[in-house]
Length: 215
Image 1 (cartoon, rainbow, N blue to C red):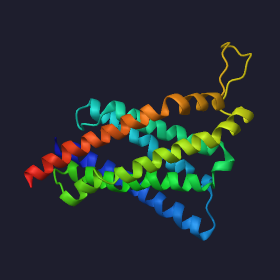
Image 2: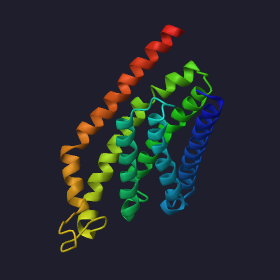
Image 3: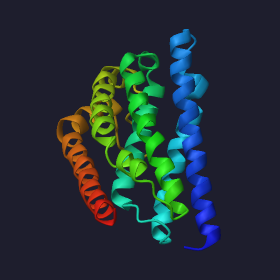
């Protein structure tokens, strides 16, 4: 990896870490102060999540070893949940949303410092262990809150028609977000969750076993 590429990757991860650290502080500081408003930070949360898609071209260009499939599932799934929260005013200040944000941002506070150091070919065992271990708390918590968010969203989106396509229309196709969420939660969510957890567990075993041998 060239020096310019290493600098770019390090800077990218530092910026992402800074965004998530600020969000973590802002969300919970304003919550405890009683001035929490989703619309004050939702745009930055979406920006920080959308830029995670850069992991895909990074992988295609060979400058990282990110799993494209896992990245797409995780980032697009997270964006979908964020837009579900944004579109449903009853979820903006819900406790489940706060816990969801805690899980989303918490795991990134360990992931991005690890990759920033890695871009400079420097690895700290404690940071490596945290990056490949804290997900065991944050991922199940986040996935549970995602399920809660979708289930709580079903009545609102079914009745309101938001993010839906009513008939008749030029496409001759109808779509109701509430119905879609019902089908997704009941058929697809568990297999997708198990895939992500399995992927992370395999990564942890592979990375920590190699690191311990080097130590």
